[in-house]
Image (cartoon, rainbow, N blue to C red; front, side, top):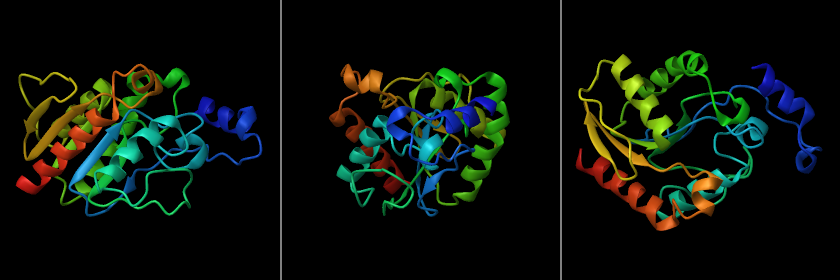
Length: 206
């Protein structure tokens, strides 16, 4: 928490004139969504600055461009909370609500945030499909679903394109759209588009 707030005070040069959000970042999207996209945590100078998850950073640029191509967003960019972005059948959130140092939350931070994810999942009454971005999102999804009464054994392993049935939910794995993954080609636009297309098909099939 203190680190999140310090980042918001000290800022970086390119955003020196902006007022940072500097607080826990809520989920965002369609309250009637059948698809939940689950990331790791807000970026220090992305969601922690703008107050909206995956907004104002390169990961968000990559993710929302794909959502737009797949017909799940009305625009391809996510710049700030007032940019007019609207999602259709999709809700985007993260395991952790606060930007962690080095983008590496501790287990204690994760466990304090998971109850909020549980509440979001319960509130999304039409939820059918969860797209986990990265192994951390996959683990957070499984932990939360277990708390909601849907444990699964043996525990399914994360992988890009991995698919598991957990209670009434379909869980899909996708590499996280981090700069490291997208700049190196580990995750390409066609790869994430394919996962989101599968998510839409799975939601329609339920």
